[in-house]
Length: 67
Image 1: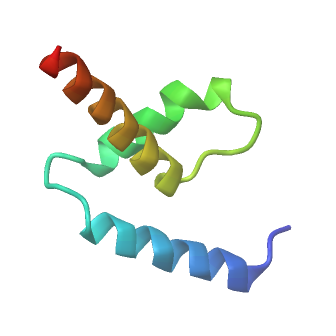
Image 2: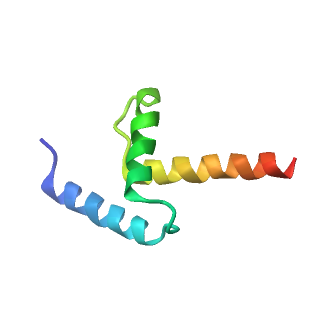
């Protein structure tokens, strides 16, 4: 069973990171990103991980567009 204080801090961090996201990054997109990428990671992915994945994929797309 997880530490309740750690769990509360994670929830606050997730809420803060959500407010910094563009409007097109929905909760559904974050959840779908976790579902798609989870099989490739040994640890449970978090919303912060999903945000990082979305940003990284976006960076790759930007690079390809410039080429």
